[in-house]
Structure formats: C-alpha cells, structure tokens
Length: 239
Figure 1 (cartoon, rainbow, N blue to C red):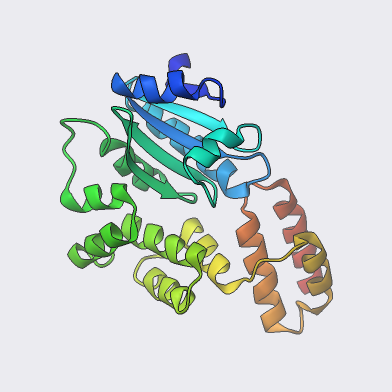
Figure 2 (cartoon, rainbow, N blue to C red):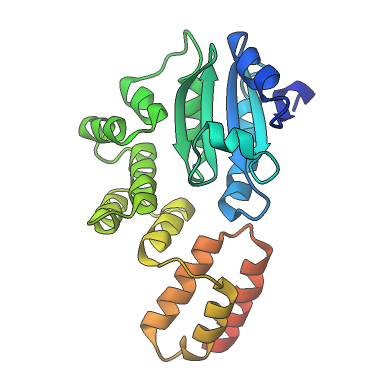
C-alpha cells in the first residue's frame, strides 16, 4: 500500500488533511477506537479497498478517543463510522463493519465518472430512505440488506429488531449477518466478561443461555483476542 493512501488524522490536522484535501481527491474518514471490536474488523477491509483505487482516494483514520473534536463535528453516536468527503462536503456515510463489496461500492460512489448502478449509488448514500429504495429495486441485495439491518439494530426503536432479523433472512448467512443478528437478539451488558462467566455453567443444559453466550461472542467479534479464549471455554463446557 502506498504510504500516502492512508493517513492518521488528528483534531489539529483535520482541516488540512481532510477538508482541504477533499477538494483535490476523495477522502474516506474512518472514525474508530482501540476498544471497538467492529472497528478492528472494518479497518483492514477499508484499507485494502482504498488501496485498490491507486491514489484516487485517501483514507483518513481518526481515533475518536484521542480526537473528540472530529467526532463532535460529525455528531458521531456509534463507531465504526465512515464518511466520504468530496469538495469539502460529506458525500455519503455508513456505520458499522461492512464487507469488502459494500465498502468498494461506497468508495466508487465518491469518484467522478465511475460506473455505479442506481442501487449501488443508493447503498453508498447509506441513509434509511436510500436503503429502502435500493431494496425496492433488489430485495435481496446483500449490501443494502446488511446496511439497513445494522441501522435498525443500532436505532433500536419499536419493531426495529424484528424488522432487522426479517431483513437478514433474505440473504445467505455470513460472518456479518451473524454479528448483526446477534446484536439484534442481545441486550447491551455493562460487563460482558462477567455475563459470559455467569452463563457458562448453564450453557450445556439451557439452550437459551447457550444462544445468548454465542450471540455475545458474535458481538464481541472474531478479531477481539478474548473471543477465542471464550470459545474454548464454551467447547469445554459443552463437551
């Protein structure tokens, strides 16, 4: 990967490295934090995709814990959050870990002259209305389904969880669909490891406890170093 393709941006350098630079080249801003498992899943994916564009796109990575000013400017409520800037303005965004195809479609939508279908353009916009419109064109479009399901789960309004799970039934199971479904089924916990510890003695005999344990691991993400250790403990408890 060329050194200039990915840059670390701070509150102090944001104007020059993101806003000003976006007048010359599309800039993708990845808002992340060290504690965020989905951020670690998305990071390598987005870096690889941006590198495919041979310098036509720059990836600006922002640690929101160290740079609260940037997070406040985007009014970030959940991470990972990704924004595309062109000519100093936000041209699209999405929240949550996405697969390479969805990220590639998003980046393509930022570039002039790229051949992007109407459905891919709508998915790249990433807002609820656009995603619903995309699904009216192609009901089982993987990128639109996962993006809308994640949006619903994170919003968590009345009926949103069931709607998200019904959406995911339209497409083949994948690591991302399992993660989103687990988020939909699992209430937030203050101390995840303590909750896993309390569930462990009951997972063999209690199917609901076993499902909740597995869901919590999906939410934790495979990249989190704790996940493998807890999966081993689950296997020992079951067998």
